[in-house]
Length: 118
Image (cartoon, rainbow, N blue to C red; front, side, top):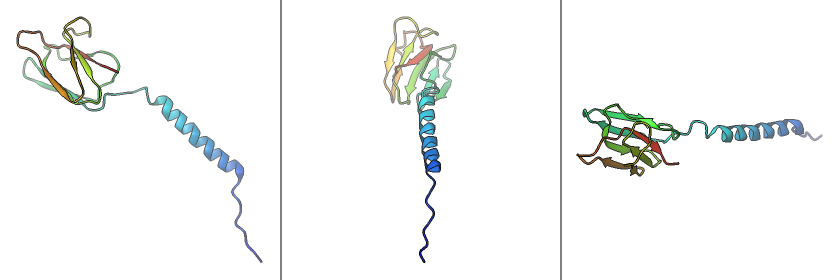
């Protein structure tokens, strides 16, 4: 007498495979929704206060403290541009690559906002 193991049902295997594919597609579709610049942006204000923002969104313009910043450290994985205005417009920008620090020249205006290059 021989004993054979029951064969898995084809429908169950197909359902598991379809579920796995659906999960992968859902994760891929949502991955761009909350993209962040992984790591901190740290800056020192004119009043010598240190501010650190951890993993800010890569989208949009980010305002700094109202007094502005004279030193900015970019420890994120994405390059950034610093602006002298609070709305990321105008000239006199400064490009700060990932893992770099920039310090403003004494007679120049402080930075008031930043945007990521992506």
